Image 1 (cartoon, one colour):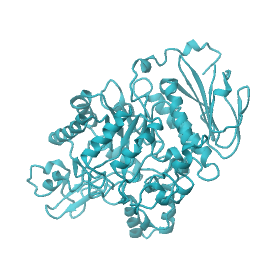
Image 2 (cartoon, helix red, strand yellow):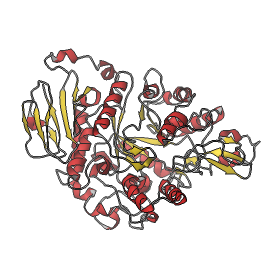
Image 3 (cartoon, one colour):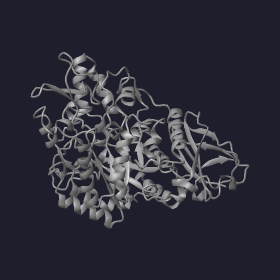
Image 4 (cartoon, one colour):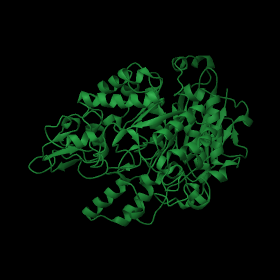
Length: 574
């Protein structure tokens, strides 16, 4: 960017986006994993009344949209992502009347509520599957993907996301059914028009109740292609080139939009394993009328080795920056992005991308600044706003996640080192994000008066909402400030973006600008101090109005900034 040119040269670059303002583009979304959020009745399981109890807390965080993970009826083989009744509430979470109260409570506070749509698969206890497996001639047989084996072996070499074969033999009918996740999560056959009609009907059921949209679980997998063996050694390549982006995916999503979504003022965001830069725009191009946003995983798989998440490698900040820059460039004129660093399926962001030891507070705030100053809708996972960290349980038995259970079985079968695996689980396991919310330093962190479904992270005595509520410089209050600042400065929502010195291995720096404002954002992703040259001519307008995770004054001369460990600062410039 040549700042010797008049600023007027850049005016108009984003009139398309400003003219096409949407509430969901300007929103900050707060994801709730209800099992771990707040228990209201002492049974150790978070529930819907617990969420209702904390609506004022969420509103005071300046949140616009609540994304509620599944609360449908489920046998909980995969913590609710195995649905047995899409129109019912799991009793341990509450009742439909309590859900209606939650929806009203959110709307009364000016917030919206988005639900998970789990439509790639159901539970094997769903009535559809019960009927489907009853006979090869049952009318529901074609609701799922059944195949004969090959001389006593599965139809192909496909592996489950959770380890082991993706095919399960059914003795009752002598065929295999496909399950890309657990064997209790059989994949639906979206090629069957009746399946799609039933999915559309259940979507209308919730939308007519007044919910404000859907986060669509692994939606990139719903169209299956051929059933040949996967030729790829790396599992992520199999996801991208075999499981995802099937031949009818866009037909299915366009049909869903046309028949259901377009009739409501709601938002959609699709979870997209296997979606990449080459095909990402196809899902969110406004002209195609499919989805509003996707969650791609280029940055979320950045520390996965050839064998996947339990084969971790260090992440590279240069590659990290490149991913955000390339996606912004790809989507900026015709689509919209999702800005997130964590959710219920990944480790805690401060432990993964920050420093959860000496620079815990500074790095948590630095990540918050990055999240709220990139272009796209911002997603925050519960607990990240107080800097919750990974947990290191002493044994596998203390974990609940089916993914961990399956990988332990696989390691035992192959005779691999279980002690080494436990260390990897401490770093990569999904239960890092699923330990209960830390509300205060009382017993069980204020989450429950009973015995929690999974142990709390012992850090709750030092990391909790109560301690941070009234501490002006807390991580919690920094999140509140950043969310408010973004709302007050739509340049950070719609404005253009350009990375500065993408090859710098420690500092993520970028411009955000439009016809109203110009911002410079600097984030030091390092425990070492760095001098950073912005290489452009500009003037900082008012240093006293900057946003920073350091309260002390900042050191810069001309365009050179002396950044302290994990320092993040936002300047308004001209």
